[in-house]
Length: 101
Image (tube, rainbow, N blue to C red; front, side, top):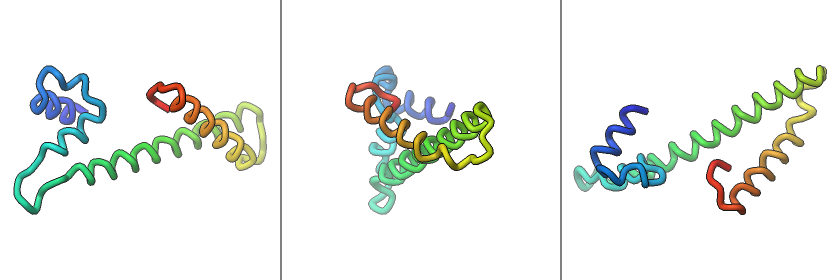
């Protein structure tokens, strides 16, 4: 995290805080040789995989928490309703224009 922050500040200076997806923007500016160029696709893949992993882990923890809260024996019964609620919440956040959905 510190390396990402420092590299973003070194590349963009005072406007580094205004950039969304700053590491992706840094990767877009890298051009070493003809072969090592356009590295933002790798950073884009990493962002997609990381957000998928975050969603899966959050859904798993939410399922385990609610299952233990209601003392249910079947841990798989709430997966689909929770996934639907999370999907609807993220869709609502996107439609309202709020980040973090």
